[in-house]
Image (cartoon, rainbow, N blue to C red; front, side, top):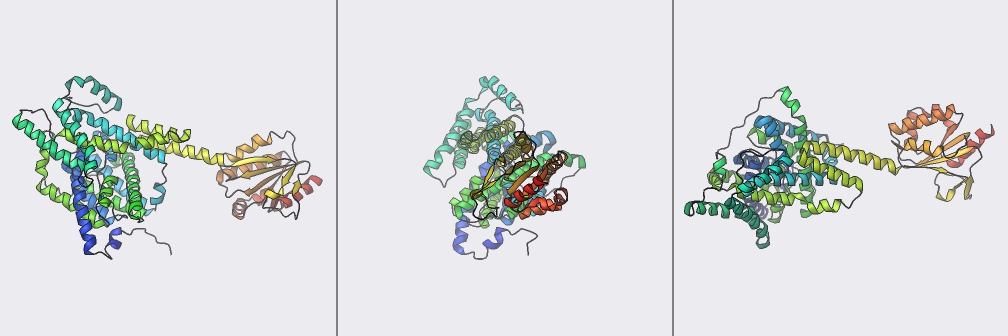
Amino acid sequence: MKKTLDFTPKMISALKNYNRQTLMSDLMAGVIVGIVALPLAIAFGIASGVSPEKGIITAIVAGLAISLFGGSKVQIGGPTGAFIVIVAGIINQYGIQGLTIATLMAGVFLIGFGLLRLGTIIKYIPYPIIVGFTSGIAVTIFTTQVKDLLGMQMSSVPSDFIEKWIAYFQDLGHIDWWSAAIGLASVAIISVTPKLSRRVPGSLIAIIVMTVTALLLKQYAGVTSIETIGDRFSIQSQLPSAVVPELSWETVKGLVAPAMTIAILGAIESLLSATVADGVIGDHHNSNTELIGQGVANILSPLFGGIPATGAIARTMTNINNGGRTPIAGIIHAVVLLLIFLFLMPLAQYIPMACLAGVLVVVSYGMSGWRSFLALTRNPKSDVTVLVVTFLLTIIFDLTVAIEVGIICACLLFMKRMSETTDVRAVYDEIDLNEDADMQAGNLEHLTIPKGVEVYEINGPYFFGAGNRFEDIMGRYGNRPKVRIIRMRKVPFIDSTGLHNLENLCLMSQKEGITIVLSGVVPKVETVLKRNHFDQLLGEENICNHIDLALARAREIVGK
């Protein structure tokens, strides 16, 4: 009997044979991932337009929920760079309250995806769309960090991508070189650290070194122009109480599109991360359970003041590389972040904004996937079109528009490709039986087509586009036949559009005094035809199993 609910958290199976050795591996991995996640959570929170503690709260609450309820053994969840653009856009238009409601709605959508078993389907979103909007997000993130990276003294930054770069070029004369040095040095440290040690996160080293450097410059060199987190935000190290936002129908209606974008983006990124992890640890995640876990996380996170969360590929790989093999590592990662948040969060006020900008610049470079982007440009023009359109729409407009238009373009191009897979051709003079499977002609090698009979063959599914090709091919014969044989031995299925086109062809032929005979109809297609009364339209004697029977029927009609 088929299960009605596909929800089996990996935590349940992981604890069955849990032992001390696995606990020690998970403990080490969880501590390291928690430390790695700290600077990223702060940076993603600030870049999204919220205070730094909200980024950490998201990593704690959502990270805990994803490990408890998710369908992957090693998935590490939290805020990611992919959400920066969409979150900032929602805050600008609807405020923090709107973001909270949109995230809650996205959580409900994600649970719905899982309950409807859409986990597998979502993974089939075309690769050019994923690369296009991921690269677009990376460019957008980099663009938003230029001001803090160079310490520009702009009072406000335009939201539009092109206007933003115009404003940057106009303000080049007001760069703070101390902040720029901090930012560029941070980028250098993060880039070099993996070559020296893969266990120690470069972003954490950069934050510690640059924070100490900024304090020394201020204390002993009188440099006060380096802006820190404390200069821009009031840091709180207290977990907020859960608050349910007030919902109104008008607000909910306006946030459906952004919430769906969050849900789709979260689903894609989490399942992509889980799939990559499977390849490394030799496991298989449960896509539908993972989506439900992600949904629970995105319902709980905004209740405590957090932002959208999903599975993070970089943190998940860090977890695996440091020995994490069960969801316990993800829980420990959340606990480590909670302890840091409660006891060390006040120290975050001394972190230079230029350093955090450097962290995000490196993140944006990693997200850009420029090698994949360039590789896709060598693919068919249809793939390149989807890639470029999605990329440009992401950076010029927003992610919601990019995903909607990108998927529409991909669907249209898919329909075009599928229609091209079906070939309709005319058969002249005689039929080569060596190529046929639907004949009963003994040892004959050829069947001659009688005078007054035309034979057409459909190779492939009979749906949109195939019916119109008959008109083009039939026009080449010139003379009007008495019988048209349509061979359907290679038609695996027929849809409603194909049925409509075939019916129109039959009715048009009948008006011209031409009899249609179907040959080699497979049982599945024959059932559909009879369900739609084609046996009454054509006559059962004109729906034949074999080409020799169809030709015999044609000779009978011509003889009359």
